[in-house]
Structures are given as C-alpha cells and as structure tokens.
Length: 502
Image 1 (cartoon, rainbow, N blue to C red):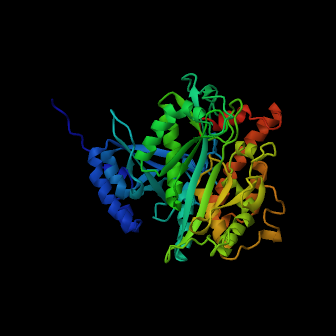
Image 2: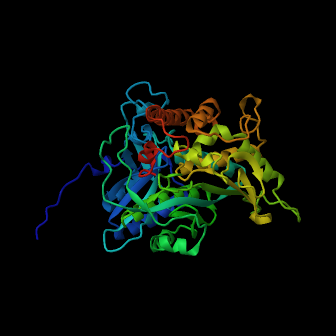
Image 3: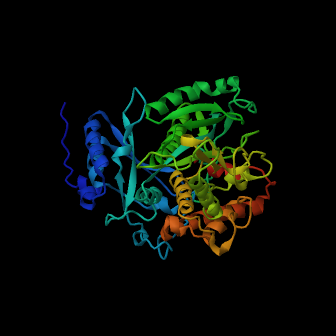
C-alpha cells in the first residue's frame, strides 16, 4: 500500500523554541537523566498529555503524539495564557486587552507562554486494549526563559528553595475525602451554558445511604469501583495507603504515605484528574466538591499532614526529645506561623463558595477554631504522633483547592514561624483578631486582598487570584440576591459551578 510522505519543515518551531531547556538551563542533573529515560520509553507510547495546574488547581493539558513530544521535551510547548485568566465558569476575569493589573506584559493580546515538561513526572497511564497514553506535568515559563509569575507550581518551587537553603526538607501526607456516585444518564450538561454560566450538573444517584462510618458493608458498595481504581493508582506509582468509606452516602477517604512536598502536590493533581476520568469511563462520577448537592451529603475535607526533616541528620524537627509528649519548640514555632498567616492565606486552602459549608457551626467536627490541639478535631491543627513520627495535621483545606498553592501556603507560613513567627500586619492576634476561621469566600477574599499574600505569591499572581475569586464570588452573590437561597443550602448555582469541574 502506497503512503505519501508529508513534509513538515516547520514542525519543530511550532512546538516551542529550539533547545529552550538547554539554552536557559532549566533542568537539574536528575531531570536531564530522566529525560534520557523518557526518550527511550517513547517508542512504546502513542500519546502524551502535557499538563499543568491552572490557578484553580484544575489540570489543563494538550494531547500530543509521541513524535511531537520528542521535540516538546527539550523545546517546550507554546501555550495560550487563557487558563490563567478564567474563573471557575470560564468568565474572563482578567482583561488581557488593556491594563490587566498583573504586571505581566506577555498577557497583553494573549501572548503565548512556554510549557516545559518536567521529565521526573513522566508516567504511562494504566489501561489496556487501546492507545498507550502517558502523562507529564510541565512548568510554565515566559518566552525569555524566566519562570512565569502566574505559575502555581512555580510558587511551590520558590518556597522549597527557601527550605533547601536552610538544609530542610518538608514531608507531607495526604488524606483526601471525595464523593463517588452513579451517573443516571449521559446528558453532557450543556443546556444553557456559556461564558460565566455552567450548564446543568450531572444527574447522579448515591452509592449507598451513608452514615455508617467505616462500616465494612458500606465500603463493599463502592469496592467494585474503588478496589480496581486503587490498583491503577498503585500502577501509577502513587504511594496509596488506604481506601475508606467515610460518613456520607458514597463518600470515600483516600490516604497516601508521606511524600516530598512537590511530589505531594503533583500526586494530588494526578490523583484528582485520573480518578474523575477513570470513574467517568465506567458510568460513575467522582467529585472533589466539598459538599455536593446529594441528599444527606456530609462535607469532604482535605487533611494535610506535615513535618520538616533536617537534611544533614534526618532529624524530624517536630519531635520532642525525651519521654515528653507533644511538639518540639521548632514544631510549636511552625504551628504558630500557620496560625499567624491563617486569615491572609485562607483563600488558598478554601477557594470556593461551596467549601465554606463545611466550616459552619452545624458540623460538629468542623475545624472552625484557630488553634493547636492534641486531639480536638474542632481545631485547625492537631498534633499527631511523637518523636520521629511527630507531625501536624492541618484540617482546614477543601479537596478542590489548588494543591500547589495550598501546599505552598502551609510551608511558607510554617517557615515564617520557624524564622520567628512575625505577627500579622497591624499587630492583630493570630487569626486576625478572631479565633474562628473565615466563614465565606467573600470574607476570605477580603482578608487575602488586605494582607501580605504578595510575599508568598508575588504581586502578579496575588492580583490575578484576587480578580478570579472576586469574579466567582460576585457572580454567586448576584445569583443569590435573585434566588434568595435558604441559609446553609447547597444551591443550584454551586452544583452547576463545581460538581462536574471539581
């Protein structure tokens, strides 16, 4: 059979800039070595999904042929900055046509940025009987080779560089709650949707009646999905520890062994994305929305366990010496930093309208109180373990949070504590003068905008996030003025906005 040979002389230039990685010295030795292994593995791969986390922590990607990815690996991929500018309903919240207020000149006119694969994150997705697809996370750069100031992963890179300068390595453990439900139809939910308004949420049925915490028979109702899912998560190399049935109907908690900070954030991005896609292909729906509009639902949280190791000795800074229980002075200083920065950075842990349902007084075990406790689950921080195993569990996050920004915020605040725990601006007490965490997206946004978030995020990303979240909060408030929902009700607006996307 005759097959024409098509000439593509401009192919290399279309996917980035020749030798972009080498020319700007973007990889360390470990990444360079991993790139050699990736190139060898591409012979057995059909497609590669090159992904990055947008400001909301949603994975954005392009699916490339393996042939194209060979050039992208070292040249980068030209990418539109559109995902940086959209709120959760695809409203353009940052106006790129004029003065956009971020200070990033390349946003004007939607100039491309360059997405560079991190070869350390390359992995083949589990599957069988079809095309072989790999996944790789990229870092965002401006065209001159400098890190993109709107990159969430870049924020975490900068925080970890500060730890490395001090000879310290954070270690984190993920505990993530989410909802598994059964799709009732194949309706794509596109009726009436568009920019600034999501279509109808997926119609689902609960997997069980719920409210039997860790009951074995309750887990058995989700096991036909969660057990094979767990095997595929292990096949991805994720350090899965457990699948557990939580309180709500079809609510699952998934836990992982401790990881490095960057691995933790990358794992959360992959876990959420892969789980949603895996379940959807089997006629089910996975959602990391904190409180979905499912009858009898109980809110889901994201607990982030954290400790810090001393590189030279391997010592856990949080472990108290001797027989005494509790945290070391360094652990207490780290916890003080988390409390001091709580209100100013709260938006990065609970970034949606919906996430604040979980923090209301009606939920008895909700982490609503700013404080540190041994076992009290109403406090945002719990001390867990002792000695080499001592760590802090921060319970405030919602599972829809951007993993790079949520992790970076925790580590930044903790390091500020280790460096002396400065009081919040204006001399207020930890928690901004209140021992109750913010109770709405608007309250968290106001604290974020009035605080010192630029010290973590840089001025461009802080301004961008403020615009994105102001758009989201404003659209909800405009809807609520017309609909007048009952207090505490999960609204139709929230279900449309978050249930499918997250």
